[in-house]
Amino acid sequence: AQTVTQSQPEMSVQEAETVTLSCTYDTSESDYYLFWYKQPPSRQMILVIRQEAYKQQNATENRFSVNFQKAAKSFSLKISDSQLGDAAMYFCAASSGSRLTFGEGTQLTVNP
Amino acid sequence: GAGVSQSPSNKVTEKGKDVELRCDPISGHTALYWYRQSLGQGLEFLIYFQGNSAPDKSGLPSDRFSAERTGGSVSTLTIQRTQQEDSAVYLCASSLIGGSSWGQPQHFGDGTRLSIL
Image (cartoon, rainbow over all chains, first blue to last red; front, side, top):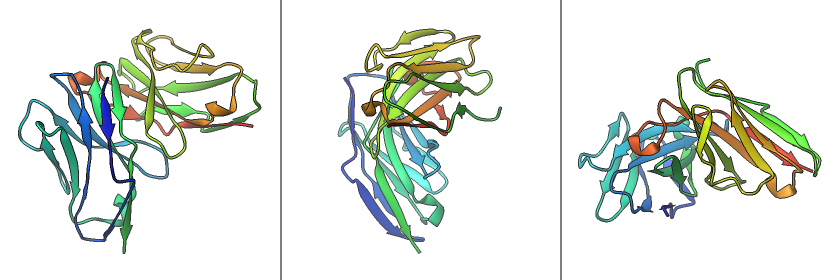
């Protein structure tokens, strides 16, 4: 079984500031991938960033970066220079064969 | 189309009725997934298709739930004799090849919000 835990139900950040969303996971897989998805009120899940577990280098996509600590099974998302459009529910997910296992989500508010 | 298309966007029905939810994946994507998202919660896996076959349907919550995929494209999720606990957003996703362990990102539709009265 695979589990993903997001311990922060809600987070807030001031516009232009940096925020970090936490995620821990547990898996018995040796080869797996980790993802962060964003879900705005429109409901569509949008891929933010992907990390390959066998790569030590942390993934980066523009203002979004991860801190992947494999031994600690931790996969946090850092958003730099936060923008109003970043406000959404953020889900951490881990791959397991044919499915993604999602965390419960973190609701991010961006204050102007 | 450019993205995953789901219909209807919203569905309200009475308890005990059958409902069909449709998903049209991104052209060329061989893998298709259904998830359920209850209010304020994360996504729960339901079923995975590779082509027209479903190698993993272990997430279907009961035998009232079934799904099929035809022509390696459109999929239909059917819920028979709906119950109030079936109320949720049903999300469909597709990817180029199956198996998230290969790292292929899943692309999601906007979902169908199902409300059972």
